[in-house]
Image 1 (cartoon, rainbow, N blue to C red):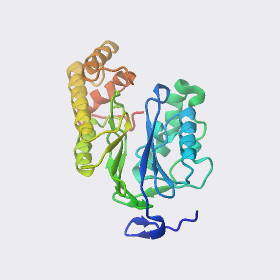
Image 2: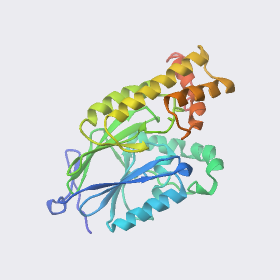
Image 3: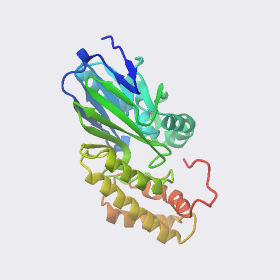
Image 4: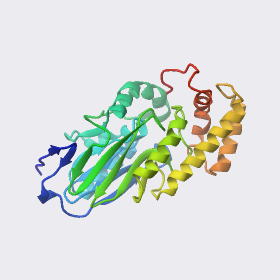
Length: 302
């Protein structure tokens, strides 16, 4: 189907004849091998818009199969942030089709600058499940810019550093109301804090609670829900920062024994082993962050 896009005041508008009909959100939830990452397929009257694309070869191929089952063309892939569990699968999702992959300039920059280092860090863990070829964004959008498909408008909000070095969310309005918030919330799994921006993340939670008011919330990990997910994530981060501060006692890192203690305490906050390894993984980054802005920090913590 030929699509004509008209850009007006930052909004991409489809012809009125294609802007009718219902929209439905389909969630693809990875299992433990894909670190429980979500991707979403928003089915509109005449096409599908994907939000994020999973981590592994198996999950991204299964996501593509889910897309094929809808029997509608993929119109765009919208990325929330630059962690591999959200963009690694784009290549398999596209299968060579000239579909725009859209992100903020900040997300695009993080992906391009960190992709090689992420592969070096994580390919030994994931082996053949790590996609050999990753597809980067092909179009960047500004904070507040909107893309419209069949009566659903997706507006991006650039959050800056948070769970990652550059976060964004996509708010859907029109015939669908939904907030696709990426890893602003990791529902029911332990959080990735290794990028060392938990203070900014806490501020982002406040901003996202305003931006997403009245909309169902679709997180990057775990079950979708309502605004209470944002409050839950805040409580988790506050507890994590408190426990790291107490254990570090002014130091920029924790010992292995202290990280084990941290894991025990955080499992009191969230009694699950889902992504438990992330608790200790991020401890040093947060201990360093808590020392304040005057302390010399690495240019980028992987």
